Length: 570
Image (cartoon, rainbow, N blue to C red; front, side, top):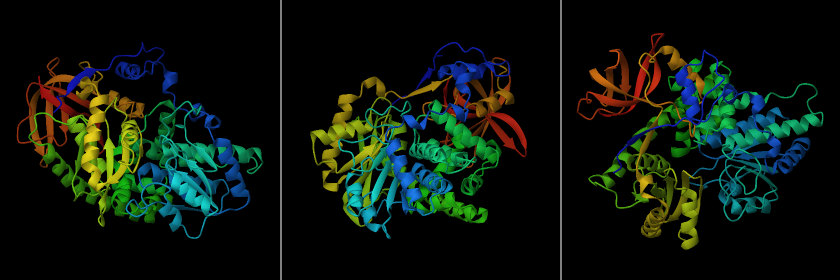
């Protein structure tokens, strides 16, 4: 097992030009993330990258203009995760705003159709649409696109996943991660790619005089773009931060779509103070649960309805499914941990886990939890469905420096036919294989991990922004930190580390801790909480804590509170 090491983030330059109202701590936090002056933190929509630099845009826009002018039937083929659901809602809402009258959507059922625009999904489409537009999938749908073309359907692929050796023979493809694509940001989520296509389509239609002086307002879609972007864990580079910040501002001002408002309400969060972590840990999982356990169409309907009461009913259904998902995940993670329990070290570098009773919709969460615990790449497998024990579906999660999709491609090149299908990103991927081939795959995965991962990368590291100065534990700083993001993947939320004495503590529920921590430098005492941290022993004192400086809102009164992420004896 890895032992956690604490390291402090190094400043990437000297901050300058900040107004006096910006707390010095926040300036240093920004500098450690490469944001050195106020202009780099100005998330104005005018600073978005141009849609025209995305490859394939002209062909896709040409086809959509023809579809709108000729009143074609357009079907949006989405995906069963949060990015796919929000992207589908953006596509349907956006195309209708731009004049398309006959727009519908289809989401594959992972247990019936498989992933993406599959031949099975194409076969199920009745009546036959004239145009299919994929969202968050399609770059690997060689057979599915061929099946659609055989039925006389035109296909536009919008995706952000990495391409394989063969591209589908579609009519147009928009994907910033295609080889040679000139778009400067490769971090757009699927919903972001769809939003960019709508921006380009609106510009073309406006040039043609479609709207007169009043262009449709596509900013009404930014709450959905923000949710999908954060939930898909793509890097929050500057362009994505502009999109997410604009979406959060829309939600906070009470202008979100009815579905997002209902999901925030169901998660017992305040719309007025919503932050990116709430999208990632509260709203996103409620949508994802439908795709994992049942049918993501429920999630898409929640995002498409403008009826507040209907949205709340959908949100409550999604909340119920999410509670079921939590219980199932807890039992599967416990079983996975038993598989590695009692080991002082892990024999495998690339860890593969399989249990016949596991649910294919939840194995990604199991892989993520075990990856965090072991600090090794993990792939968790389950039977493809309750009725199909001969085939497995796996979900992979990786560590920094080990490109999981490229690793699967290397295995596929060395042992053709071992993996039936695969796709994904650097940090996450999915695959399928025959159950009888699992032992051979597990051996091959460990071998490629041993070949490509240096020993030092197996050491878990927690990066912090250093110590908070005495007297800086203020509500004003906590508010600035919350509003300063949006924080997320590759632009991490500020974490600080300090030495404290534990002057008091008690257990909340069964596993959570509420503490009072005394700063030895000035004797000040600070409220703190740590979730899932009580295992029958009192916290150490003195201790070193890694924490977020957050805000506790109790009965309308806000106070600073430390949210502990890690503690160890000092």
